[in-house]
Image (cartoon, rainbow, N blue to C red; front, side, top):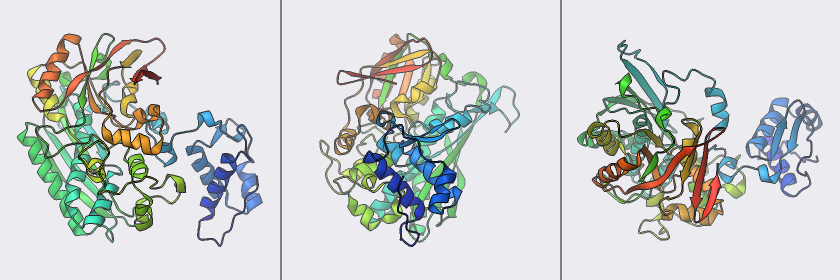
Length: 469
C-alpha cells in the first residue's frame, strides 16, 4: 500500500492517510477482500504515531471501506457491504454501535418502553415512575446558522428551539406521558459566530412555543437551561434539551402491547396543522446532515467552512444545486423554508386520544432516529408491513433526485411523510384519523402487524417495490 504523506502540508497527516487509502480502494488498487498491513506496521513504515493510524482506520471503517476481522486486522470491504452516503458523513441512522453498548445496560422498569422508565426517585411514590429524556435539534441548528448569516435575522432560531423541544416531547408521548413535563435547554455555541442575539432568539422561541403547547392542553414548563461557550468544540452552535416527567405506572405505554393483528395509523408530517403558523415540509429533525449537504451548493462550503467537518470527503460536502432562497421543486416553499420547517409535535393529538379514548392506543412509535425502520427496535417477533404509505413529499423527492440515494436508504434516514405511528385495532383507526383531522393533520392507515418467526422484520412498499429490513 503506497502512500505519500507530507507532514508539512496544510492538510493534516491523518486526513491525508484516510483520503489516499479511500482513493486506492475506489480505483481498485486495493481490491475487495485485500488484507491491510497491521496498524503497527503502517505506523512504523510511515513514521506515524500508532494512535494516528488507529484513528484513520476507524474513520475508514466508519465509511464502510474496510472491515475489522477477528484477530486478523482489517480487510477491504466488499462494495455491496459499503455504507450509504449518510454514514459516510459521520452520522449513523440507526446508531447500531451505540445500541451495542446501551442494550447491555439496565432497561428500567419496562424493557419494551420507547424511553427508559425508572422508579419514582423524585417523589418516592411506589405507584409512580420517572421518565427523563435528552435530545436536540441536531445539525438543523447549522441550517439556522446559515440562514442567520445570509439574512442577518436571528428569528430563524425560534424554529430551532421548537425542534429541540419536540424531539424530547414526542419521544415522551410514546410511553404515554400525559401530565406535567419540565424541560431545560442547553446551548453550546461559538460566541464569535453566534452572538447574544442568537441566544436571545433561542430563549424567546422556547418560551413562546412552550406557551403555545400549554394553550393546547400540553402541560409543559421551562426549567431554565445553560449556555456554554465552547468555540473549540463547535464552529457554530448545538441546541439540546432534557425533559423529565413523573407518571403513574399504570398509565405507561410499552411497545410490548404491539401485537399481530393491529393496524398502523400514520400521522402526516406535512401540511399545516391548526396550531402551526405556516406550511410544514415534513423534514423534522432527522437526516439533516444528509439533507443539508445533498441540497445545498458548494457556495456554503466556500463561505462557511465552520459548518462542516473537514474529514468528510470533499465530494460529500455541500454537493447540491441549491441555495436557501431557491424554490423547492413541486412546492410553494423555498429550499430554505422547507429545510427549516420546525419539527411538528403530535402532542395535542396524542393527549386527546389518551384522555378521551383510554385504551385505544396499543403502541406509539416516533419515527425519529432510524426513520421508518425505528419500529424494528420495539416489541418482539413482529412483522411490520407498511404498504400504504403517504405520497413522497417534495422535500424528500428532491433530496433523492439530487443525491441519487437509494430509496431503501431514504426510508432509513428520513420520515418520508409521516413521523408518528399509532398502533391500534382496525376498528379504532377511524377514531385516530378523526381526532387528527380535528387538528388539520392528515392521517391514514399505512400498514399492519403480523406475526414473525425469528425476530422483528419490516416490509415497506415504495411504488410497487418491496424493501425488507
